[in-house]
Image: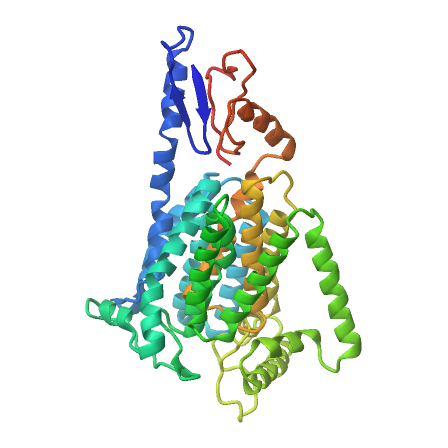
Length: 484
C-alpha cells in the first residue's frame, strides 16, 4: 500500500490487497481522516454566512430594535461560540481573548456609569455581539490553514461581486446594488458625495470609507494566501481587482491602507531571500522617524497623515480633532464621555472622531483604548514571533501581519465602525490558529516523513515513512491527523 498525505486528508491508493495486519480500528481511523475535508467544509458555513451577511444592507425591525443582517447573525451565533471557546473547541484560551472581554466589560461599565443601567442595555448588548461575536466566530471556525484560506477566498469573491456595481456607481452615481436589495426589504439611505467629478462609492455599506476598508484591507491576504504557489500574473490579477475596487471609495483611509500593504508586499517580494529584511525595515523606519522629530517642526505622525489625505483642509481638521479630542480624554480619563457630545469649540460643526484609537479613549476612557490596543498588539506580536512557520504558513503569516499593519496605521487617522469594525475583529481572530501550530523541530520531523512519501510537508498531515518499509504505526492506528 502506498499512502499519499495531503494537507487536509489522507488518500489511500491500493496497489494490492489490504495488508492483513491492518486492524478494524485503523480502517475506521482512515475513514475519519478521509472525511476530514468534508467535515472542514461544513464548519466553514458559519464563516461563510457571517461574511456574506456583512454585505447585505437590509435593516430588519425586531420590536424597538432595527438590526442589520450581520447583527442578527451575531446575536444568534455569539453564545454558541462562547460555549465552544470555554470548552476548548477553539484551542486553548489565550491572552487576547481575556483582554477583549475586559475591553467590553470596561466599555459596559463606562456606559452604565455615565448613562445609567436602563439606557445602557441596548448599546452594551450590541457592543458585546459586535466585539466578541466576530472574534470568536473566527477563533472557533478557523482552526487551520485550509479554513484560513477558505475565509480569504470568500472575502475575495465578495469583492469580485461588488466590483462591477462599484464601477457603475463611480461613473453614473447609480447605486444599483442597493436598489436591488431595497426592492426586497428596507435599506438605509445615505446621500452620495462627489470628488473630482466622480461619485464616491457606497455600494452596500454606510459610507465610502467603510466600503474602501472592507474591500481593500484584504489586499495582502489575497496576494499571499490565495496567491501562494500561483504564477506572478495570477497573483497580480487578484491583487489589482482588490486594489482597484477599494480605490473607487475615493477615500484617504482606504488609500492609506492600500499604500501600506503595497509597500510592505513589495519589500517582502524584493528582499524575499533576506531573512533579516523586516529587521532592516524597522531600523530604517525608526531612524527616519527620529530624524523627522529632530529636524522638522511637526511630528512624524502629522507629516505622514498630511501626505495621505486628499486636501489640506481635511488634514488641519484632523489635527484639530486630535488636539481637542486629547483634551477631552485628559478631562475624562477613566470613563470617557460615553455617547454624549465630546468637548470642542463651537466652530467645529461635526462631532465625528476620525481616529479609531482616539475614539475609544474619548467614548470609554483610556483603559478601553489601552485594552483594545493591547489585544491587537498581543495577537500581532505573538504571531509575528511564532517559531516554526515555514513555506505556506510563512506566507500566510506575512499576509496576515501586513493586513493588520494597515488596520493599525489607518486607525490613527480614520475610524472603524459597523462592518469595518466587525471585519477588524474577525480578521484579528482569524490568525490565532497559527499560535497552535507545532514548533519547528516537530514540523521538521513531520516534513521529512512526508517528503519520503513524495508530498509537500504540511501541518495538517502526520505520519512517518521509511524507505522500503510499511507506514509506521502510532498508537493503535496507522495514520493520524492533528488539527492545529
